[in-house]
Image 1 (cartoon, one colour):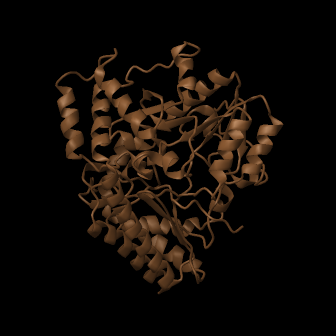
Image 2 (cartoon, one colour):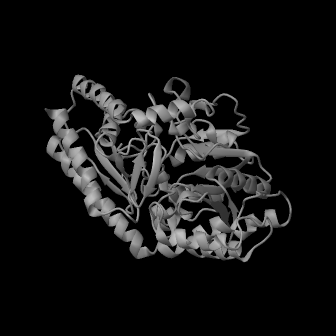
Image 3 (cartoon, helix red, strand yellow):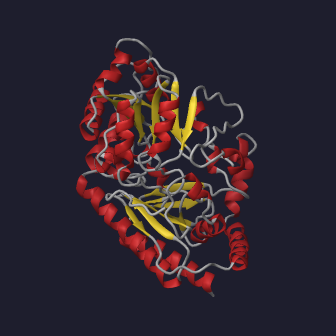
Length: 463
């Protein structure tokens, strides 16, 4: 289906792609895994030690990959150092948590200063109010509450919607990830043999999960959303969606899609929640909502607002947040709004000016254009997508508009591309479908290194 993505996004499709040799991909992939194991024995040893006290030897299941993940000793600016002393340019950047780069001096200065006055009060403090003021002004919301993770923020945003509407049903997008709250772990990356028809996906529930009243819809399909609203009229409290999907590479909204979503939520009295945990400041100085011109009822924030410290938030219309104020439901958290995290929020607010973020976005566009030139020169069956300071290569000749399109991409070459870069000093997220991030501390030389890695891979693939 030919579509037009939103004008505030970046998409370039190939003009003359040719298939890749599967045997050549397999040959290169086997060689790269051997190179990885030979150059990272320290990470292998550390993972074996860590596995004695932590499942898989990691603190979060996503951090693991076979045979073992890299274990990092230190990081500064745009670089990380692993257990073997290998230097890597970090293009993972905590999925946005390190938007300002590792150990940014302004963040460090403000956090160290905050430590002089206390690390935890568990009572109200002016630092928390100041940070709330800054977020409300920047993201154009009436009120906000702080949490400690994106999972908490989406969970409490949903509870706010349920309290406000008196309804229990939740709608989410197939393929969308919104943290570890039970209903939002369903149909994240479901097997296609269980997922049902593309226009009316099945609810796929992972083990040990209680989804409650949950309905699944495809992204970029407002008609399917309206059908669910009609079928379950009067029972749906909210629709939770990333304005730009960033769990399955980068999936852009079609022109008019989010505007229609906004109309439908208003018409059916459904609270529209934008999950901006991954977009947030990586989308621009005021987030994806304002960049794309569609205002939700509630938003969730995390990662990029904290400069590397654990902090998150949810907020929006006062008429909805009033359901906390009037004690319809309670929002708790011992570490909520702690002074160290609030200092980091204020540091990031100071650092992330429109000019600074535009400079990083310009560098991201330089990378996207450079890799697109490689795709065209070597006629690779791939395309580039970008949004704000994030970008990705999707190994498909056609635009990925939803989860089913994503499942049709070539994951073997995606794995090879990721591993090829790691073995040459560049790390991107290990999900094979995530996106790189250009921090405020990356330089053109580091950007050119990522482009060069793709050029060398393309040459090897076509040799």
